[in-house]
Structure formats: structure tokens, C-alpha cells
Image (tube, rainbow, N blue to C red; front, side, top):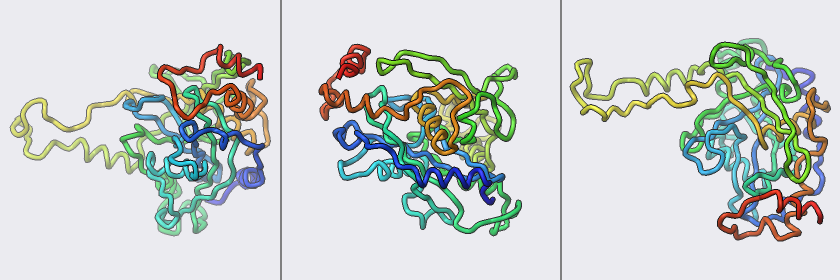
Amino acid sequence: MALSPTSTRVLERLRAYTPPPTNYYNCPLSRRAAVLIVLFPDRHGDLKVVLTMRSASLRNYAGQAALPGGKADSLSETPWDTARREAYEEIGLPMDDSKLKGFKVEHLCELPANLAKTELGVRPCVAYLSPTVPTSGTETSSGGTDSEVEDRLIPRLDPKEVAAVFTAPFHAFLRKEWSGPGPAPVQKNGKPEKWYRGSWTDWHESRWRMHNFYIPKPPPSSREMRRNAAKSQPPSGSSEHGTGLPEGDDPRPEPSALDDLTTFRVFGMTARILVDAARVAYGEEPEFEHNSHFGDEEMIGRLLKIGRLSDVRKKGEVLTKDVLRQASKM
């Protein structure tokens, strides 16, 4: 699982990247958040990124694709600390490398803060998840295959906050057409699905490119198959003749909306962050139209100047076009 030459250069660029001054630390605690961009090598040595589908029970962005992350707990907590803590709570990525059992997490860099519609300053933190003992070929040092190692790299999800954990080729977020390994995205009817769709919209009092990526839903991993098989076992005390638990008390899970999906759609701020991260990492511009600036540091600073992003959030407070227009004049 040696890194490809391209991936090696990507990590070097990210380690060397220094972001511009940030307004993140000017935001009050209630407006600070961070996300973790977890990169890891696949069996070919190319980099992939870990993503999640948020649970339908969450208050914000329910059922949407997202990077692991969330709000800061204290003013002393750095964006990296926040991102690591949230990744542990959401997808089970240990904060202590000693608990990763053969893997380690390297803090590569941080990117300019983005402005969420919920009026949070979101700081992306880039991490590299790698094996501590290099392996070669298709056999690992523990006797497993590279595909099994990739399964181990995908942290165990916490169903309280995350409905699914999946991965995508990192370089693909600069491509207009699907170029990743494995089958291309398809629609429910089996017809080909576009990998990328984009359009321009008004946001931040300027033209803002909305990116949409359709990531092929992977087949279940061996771990997921074992877990699903265990869940589908008849409850104790039941029989094929219907004796046991009363009708309606079967605790086996009902199929979820995710079961019907053929692709995971990544869009909005998450897509923007991934495009920006890939631009920095690969030293390339996307094959599609995009905003040239990285993040939303300037708009966050302007909102702070007009008294928005205050510590106490007012009921019904919404980031409207009028507010953004006022901020743009600062």
C-alpha cells in the first residue's frame, strides 16, 4: 500500500501549506465549528477521503452528506481538537493513536474558514490516516489483503449521529467526469448518472458556484454484512410459526431511505471545502467553473463588524440577503 508519486507530492504540499490569517478566533464560542478531512491511501496508493451521511434525526443538515465535525466545546479548544473530538463522537476515530491499532493520524494543515448558513465559522482541518507499518503487494503484514486494510481504515460509525460512512477518491473533486476506481455512478433506473453537476447562484452578495458530486454507493463491507446479518436474525423466542413476541414487537430494523440510494450526493459547503482542499493538495484548478477564493474569511470578518455572529443567538435569526448586502458594504 505504498503511496503513489502523486499522493506523496499531495502530502508534501499539504504539510507545507500555510493558510492566511483567520477570523475563526474572532468568533464567539457559539459560532465556532470545525470539520476533519480524513485522507488515507487505497490499495493503489491513491488518496481517498472519508465522508458521512448525517442521521435523519439531527436538527441541522439531516440526511445530508458531510465531513465529520461539529461545534467547539470551549474557547481553549483548537479547530484540530474540535475536529478530532467530533470525528471520535461521530465515526469512532480514536483521538489517541495508540488505540488505532496499526494506524496513526497526522495533522497536515488547516484551511481558511467557511461560512455555514447556520452562521458558523467552519475551519477545515486536513488529516492523513496511515498505517504505522508499511505493507507491500496485496498481502499485509498481518496476512490480510489491502481491501481488508481499507475496511479497517473506515472507522466504525455511531448511528446516533451518522447514518452511513463512505469514501470517495480525493482527486475526483477536481474532475468533471467520473475517473475513480470501480463502477461509475448510476441512477435508480440503472441509467448512467453524472459525476458532477454545477450551477451559479447568489450567496454572500456575490456569484457562488454550487457543486454537486454523485458518489457511487459502494457494496457493503464484510463488517457491514456481518452486522446486518446479526440484525436480521429472528428475535429470541420467535419461530417460523409466529410464536414468541406479539405481532408488531419485532425489533429487527426497517429498511432505511439509504437502502434505496445508488449514489451519495455531496453538495453545498461540504463540496466547496473538498474542491478547495483538492486545489491546494494537487496544485491544480478544477475542470469545472468555480469560485477562485478559498473559504469565506472576508465575509466572516465583515459579519463580525456589523454585529452578526454574536455569542447569543436570537430566535428566528437567519442569514438573509439583506444581512449579507449590509456586510458586503463594510
